[in-house]
Length: 317
Image 1 (cartoon, rainbow, N blue to C red):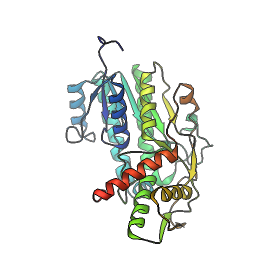
Image 2 (cartoon, one colour; image 1 turned 90 degrees about the vertical axis):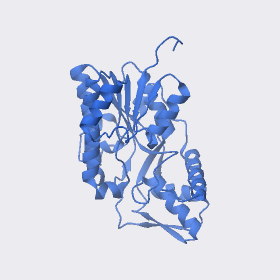
Image 3 (cartoon, rainbow, N blue to C red; image 1 turned 180 degrees about the horizontal axis):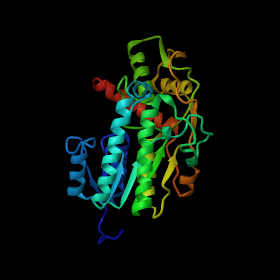
Image 4 (cartoon, helix red, strand yellow; image 1 turned 45 degrees about the vertical axis):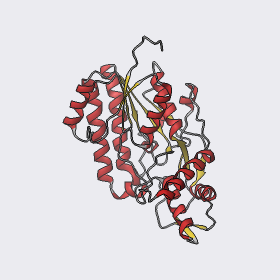
């Protein structure tokens, strides 16, 4: 970009979350876009009128829609109304208002849970809507599918470059370590660290420990998002995964090793496992020039150090 060329103004919706904050850091490092940041105290995306007014006033050139209600398997299983309603509201409020405000480029953050529970592995983009969803996170998945399809419809009907990215399970700095609402990696880190600090002889892991999961560092996803925004004609939606699978029990063992916990790791088969396997085929995005750079053990070591350091300074919320 030349020094005289105007930088596009990018609104990162959800800039304080795991993904949004990683995108903000990546944009700041590149310096090729002007950042527009507005937290919930500025605009509540579940409020349709407030969302519309904000976009008509600010008129960003581009949007990355990373704002969402997110949580782990228990939060999704026990609060499906909130996960469906809030995520559906965010998509149906932001995307049409973006069109009204003249936003020509929007990237929507989806999730690998949009795909059927029994989809062939690794999952290709074409598997969407080919079978029943995983029941434990169906509400969240339906809302994310609706957002993806709304972007696709905007592109087809109005010629707007609204498209989506479907990441696998994510982790990274600034994750949510809430004891009941976190995803698997931060949840395990918190429980294993607390067991080490208290001297507990064992940690019980939900489920059988056998499900296979793929994890992607948030910084790698941020790079993928900016890569897609740089493309003139990206697909309507594309997968983003690391290509590295690990069982939940093996994941817990790795985290225990990084945290120095030497107690027993037990499983509880009475608790739900979720989808048996959920690996994404990311060959389409890789063919477009993106590659993940942070291996799982490298990333786990960093977030374990971060959590332990924060915990040493006081209670982690």
